[in-house]
Image 1 (cartoon, rainbow, N blue to C red):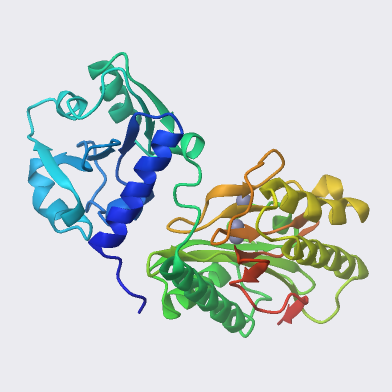
Image 2 (cartoon, rainbow, N blue to C red; image 1 turned 30 degrees about the horizontal axis):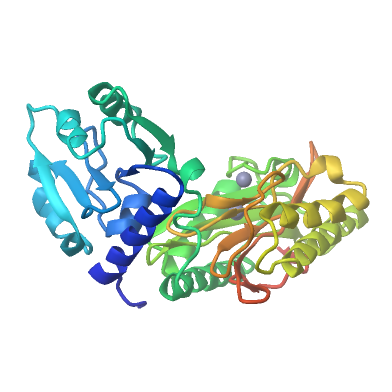
Length: 372
Ligand code: ZN
Ligand code: ZN
Ligand code: ZN
C-alpha cells in the first residue's frame, strides 16, 4: 500500500493552488465535489447531489469549505479536514447566499469543470458582478505534476493493467462476443487490484476503426485484428493502456505494416519526451511518422491525455497545446490508425516525464501478439 496523504500534504496542495490562482489573476478558486476537491482536501462526499458543497480558496485567507449541515460530520472526517475551516448551511436556507459571503462580490474565480450548472448559476445570481472560468482553462496544471507518492500509485496501476493484458492473451477470442472479452478484462483489472474499472474497449475487425467503440455483440472471428484499451483506478490513481492483437497466426501483410507504423509512431513520440518540449510536439512527432507512411488521414484522434485521479485530464498531447512538459507530468501516448469498415490499430502507454526523458508505466511488448 502506498502511504496515505496527510493534512500536511493537503495544506501544501491548497497553498500552491491558491498561489497559482493569484498568479493567474484570479480572486480565488471555487472547488466543488469531484477530482479537484479530492486532490485538495481528500474529501469525497458519499453522493454528489444538488446540495451545494464548495471549497473556497482565497489568497490571504484560510481555506474554507461550505457543506450542507447534515453532511458536516462526513466532511469533518475527511483526511484534509484539519487544514480547513468548515462552515455549513441548512436545508430551507439559500446555500448560494451563504457561499456568496465567502466570495468577493466583484471577484473573478476559477471553478471546477465538473461543478453543476445549477451551482454556478446560483452563485452568479447571488453575486451578479462575480465571474467564473473553468479550471481546465484557468489553471490547467493544477493536478498535472505528480509528486513521488502519486507517481508510485500511477506506476502500480500501470503494472496491474499490464498484468491484466498478459492474462487476457490466454483467454479464447474466436467465437466469443466482444462483451465477453470485455467482461474478462474488467474481472482481471479488479483481480489485479483495481477498485474501479473505467473502460474495457474490445474493438474487433471493423469495430477497431472507431477509437471510442466500447464493446458490443459482435462475435470475434479468426483473422480479426482486435484493439484492447482498458483502464480504471487503483488506490485512487488511473491506468490506461492499449494493445492490438490478432486472432490466429495468419496475419495479413497490411495489418503487419499498419501495426509497425503505429509502433514506430509510439516509440518516436516516447523518445521525444523530455522537460521543456511542448505537448503539441509529442503529437507532431507521432503524426509525422504516420503521415509519412501514407496513413495521416486515418489518425483521427489526438496523441494523448493526462492521467492521475481521473483517466482523462490535462495536459493534452494535441496540436495547439503549447504547455511544455515538466518532470512529474503523466500522460498517454496513443497513436492509432483507423481504417473505416476494416480494422484499427492503436498502441498506448502511460508515460511520465523524468529529469531528462520519459519513463513508461506500461511495459508489455509492443509487438503484434496473437490470440486464439
Ligand atoms: Zn479517446
Ligand atoms: Zn486508452
Ligand atoms: Zn488513453
